[in-house]
Image (cartoon, rainbow, N blue to C red; front, side, top):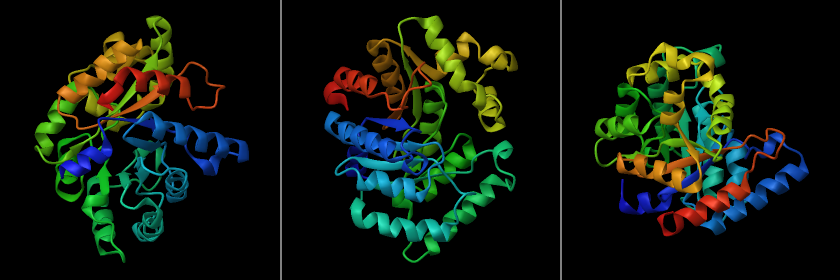
Length: 296
């Protein structure tokens, strides 16, 4: 990976599952466009479209932006064929001018009826992207990767890895597995709330679904957590390792822990207690951009 690629991603980006224009009405699409415009103005390096986005979602975000890198975090290989994705990305690239990156993942068995042989299925999918006309090559994709085999694949067949729901310790291990040249861009969930009990409640609300998915719990067990850490929505030890909870100073310090551990880029997912809100926490995004300043 070149220094230009690292610079294009920036040190800090925003990960959001609320950027799916296909799931909202006209007012929602306008709110997304305004939020994206502000993210560019604030100086974030990359916007990650979370929550299993489609190529159409990616196309809409690219069309609504001018300079920021756009990445899917993560498009499921079970939802879209490699041939369809390659054809759609060819159209996206006409607008993106090199600033779109395809993030791919194998999702989870409990969520995908046809789930089978995730590593082999990802290899076959990458082969199909390479063989497509036009191809989507390694320089234009990243992989959701937690374990050693998928991290090795991310280093050899993609720009690098975009691990989700991981600790700073995992980031250090991932850097060693990837080597010095591959991109490492972990997601970090953030709750900007100085009431730590309330912040942990918000974090547990988000974490509940993931603690039912073996890919994540197996990875956490590998990192030294115990089954007891998954009880009652997650132990304090688990929450404090997986999330950045507190004021902006605490969040920026936690982000630097991941950068110091070997991340090139950290994708911040800001969680709020207001589940009835828009899902676009623009005030929090502003506060974090101000706190990071030139570090973005």
